[in-house]
Image (tube, rainbow, N blue to C red; front, side):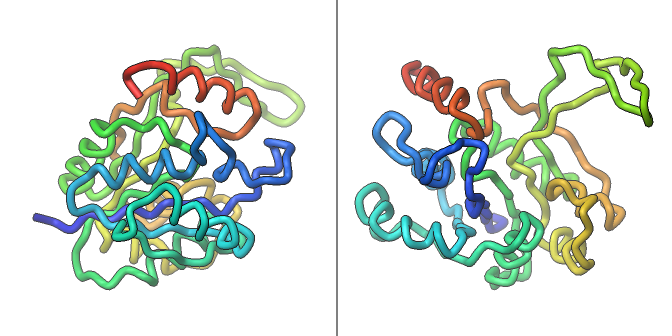
Length: 226
């Protein structure tokens, strides 16, 4: 069986949340957001986790891990970088494997389903790169200079995480210097020439970024599905 590894990116400061505590450590139904996320990957048999945290985040981590997670949880810590690109690159450097499937996931997406995670690993093994997405529910316009125009929303996909790849694909892709055009992991991998295979995500797989997202998360956790 191919080795499964999750890189959880949780080194953000959470400026849009507006508080002093980084959003990944805020309480959600009594437990930190990040703990909910980690538990989804800990439920996958044999899955190893590499957690990228900022220097500030490392100060929060130890008491949280001690209180909420098993002592033998297969979690390796790395220091996050200046950007997501650098955080993932640091995490890749910590992987000692010749072959693996690597799911990169936002630490503040705690509502990803086990089904999406498992489908992502299967698709990545088959296609090399598998990215979760959903259809746009809204009308879409793109700006062009001072103007703008409508785009058929049926051609638009809203990208989520996990973004899952063969390790060899990731290593090749992240050999390049950072570019501001790298908005997510898939954009880095696509730049290397690898085609991106899309898999079905979920509208409940939200990224907790604002106070409104946190309130919605409380509602989600009140439902038996989570």
